[in-house]
Image 1 (spheres, rainbow, N blue to C red):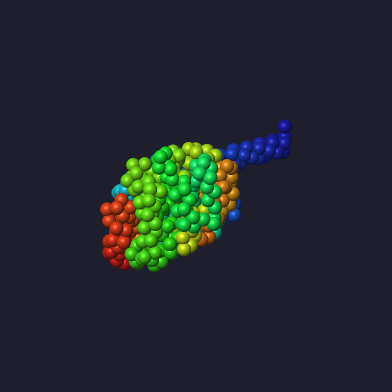
Image 2 (cartoon, rainbow, N blue to C red):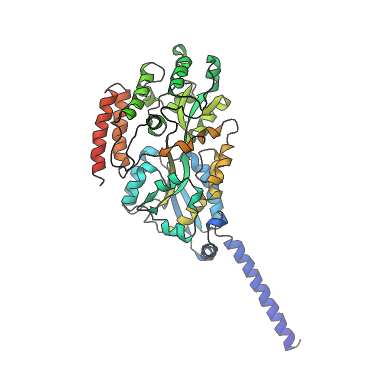
Length: 442
């Protein structure tokens, strides 16, 4: 064999070796971003892929208060790990009553999860304490498209004109009803034409004291109970500029009085009964014909009632609608794995993650492209009832210290519903205390 032949063979061998290495590298690295290609720049995607091959093992700790997210989260992590095989993701679920207290304590101490779910009432406090990562530069760098989420919820997670959270799901509200109880009482099912008066009249017909069945549950709950009624009455929880309480307004107080009247007339279970048994549990056990509830209650109630369950828009007062809310994923500002957490956040809130959330039926996905999947997730239920009045909603009542004034609001409204204090007096007291707290935010 001459030198020319040996040289040709060596070149071919090197080329084959290089090709094999390239194929192996492609299999290991994969694509860096499983979300919609339009949302990530080619440069960012290529950079993430190159780094994924050389990175050491990383553990990401994630926290939420939502038990129902375990399965869709697990499926989403599987998508993420296709391109981030070096990252182990651990999810911790803490009951909501302890979630934010434990979270704040750990974050202030310089620890806590890398990535966690956040709600509106607590967002301003955590952002103002510098506990959250400013995501604005990452959003701009990766050209992450925020227009695929509802504007109101996106803006709920902005602080000092910068984005700190990316929306994951919305909290829309509807009127659940028990078809079997309606059929027995020969009362037509609720629809979009119902008003407070229609509700009250039909709830009285559906009330059966001999069977201990209530026509309606005046839910002693902020998001699904009295907040929607306050909005429908034309009242206010807090002013648009977040500086003044609206609890002393006549319209606001009329909403709570409406609830109290239904309780006093025996149409609704008492506030004390609701302390002992949650409204959705009372309804799900067949003890009530109607209850206001969130999109996040649909799958649980369907498991309890099956095809007996129906849902319609909330009845209108002076106006239709409610305060809309939604939760976002945020990143711990002290996390040592900012890039890995951001990449996971993008998968969770991108089309792949939101589709998996939608299919689980747990809640209304924030990503507009995944809503149709959610609407089909419980075929027997008219899920469109949750979106027909979305354009008639207002921003959820929040300020820097929402948790503080919300606690006193809950206390005073509960006192009023229990009959301990007249409605007007209870809400006037709450308004004064709330205004004191708001004044300290300036």
